[in-house]
Length: 267
Image (cartoon, rainbow, N blue to C red):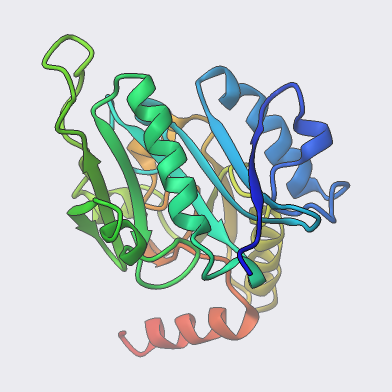
């Protein structure tokens, strides 16, 4: 039997009542509060959050997107809508919810007369893979280490007027120079964009201290900083060790030790 669902919009007016899908059971945690405060300014910039709620059930999927000039990823995408996150959880998978949310974003993007929609995907973790976007009219236009693809759905109907501002979405190529700018020791580059980042930051600081590694945290406070300074395309979180990229994702202790061992062995 097909499950009925509705697509709810989260905005500044209902944010505290609806939440933003992630960390719903941990509203008192610092990560949740940081994300909530971050969202207030993002809504003013045109951010949209859409959540799928199964009738008589629970929230099972969400999408977060924003005009490309305000994207918190190391990407240039002015004139496009940029998807930050697409997530379908648990029993929500396999029901077409990902497509429904992508379609919702495309509809909003057409209404704003933008050139198309873009998203950064990954073949590893923390971002959805590119396959669902390929099935929905997106094409890979660029890639970045260690695992990122920039996917774009460019509208054929985009008008050739001043509304078609900016160039095609692109990724930078100066990743090594960006990493070197953070110098010696371990640097955690972070933002408030994801509520899981707070715990991830604290865990890595603890791991580093226990192993005698000098560490510091650098907070990127604007989309422009992320676009121009992040050593990873993911943008909103990452670690650099002695001027070289370590990881862009939340690390468990065993993962941290594995990366250190690989670095020591010249990997």
